[in-house]
Image 1 (cartoon, rainbow, N blue to C red):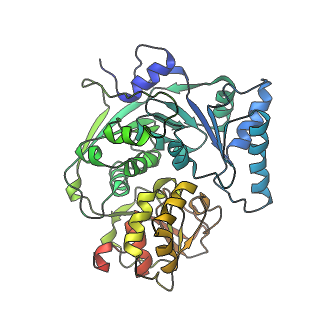
Image 2 (cartoon, rainbow, N blue to C red):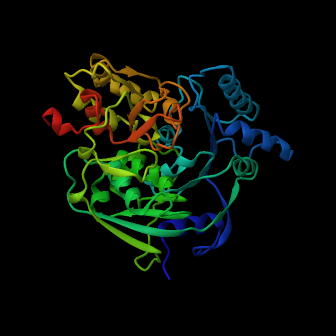
Image 3 (cartoon, one colour):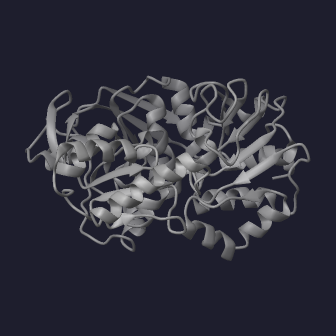
Length: 421
């Protein structure tokens, strides 16, 4: 019996010829990631182990991105724990303010995650790196601590659902719309502890930015990982960034899937996830009665340069609705600089949006965009649970950058076509 791409990567890192779904394995990891919320817990547990050093100073990444720039004393102390630990053990991939970015955009940009890698992160959206053809998954801080000491982690080999996307995308439909549609179809537990393997002609044509977005939100369907087989588009992205060898894996033709789902993308419209679940999706065009107070464009889901370009295309020459505030967050310093050079930041400021340094802040209701009671936001983030972005009686709607930008101009949920596109 053949193996899926996920099974092949796990087998290779476990030193086995083959593995199958349900098998418990121990495997060597290529990277261990933690941030300013999860790393302090992992560091505390690491120190309890009594080991004298980390397993590899170049295979640990500490990224203070959630409450940064530090919003208060507590967050400053959290970040200091990372800094002190990084300097104590001479960890190479520690990113201080000014060099930091949103972790799941920063690490691929830095060439720290590559095709064929096995990556664990003390953050649920670590599954983002599956876009590169890596098996990447979120773990608890204790597992991260042990991995920092040993370079290994245990895994239960997941079953895989294969998703095939075909047809021609409608205007303004992107990876965000496809993954929202998919989660709406299978539900927030539709892929629990499974790998979601995204394939088909639409994926073959999709840029890396869209692939990152789709794999990022696999966890919103309960998945252990999202993954896309690497190809020429992947190669173009990684070859200028990689600082070490990498390997392309593909699923065998006779690989076993627990389910195969197919979607005709020509029928998929720009989608919005309504409160309070990412699966509560409706076409954006059906929600024009929903007034909004805030727009957030950014996050590990949609803070890449392509996302900012999409928003700028809609905002150019227009103003944000006077009753709406718009916060735009480039995901990394490089993305910020590239957007500046392209004139995107000028477009945003002239439209009366505010541009923030890289941070996860508003996505988790941390800072830089907290909602008051009764307020509504439309955001390019990944979760819209009760109280996710602030007051428990606020609401969050999830969308693509195109829909978010158009909504910011209209003062209500809307689509680019309403602005003449």
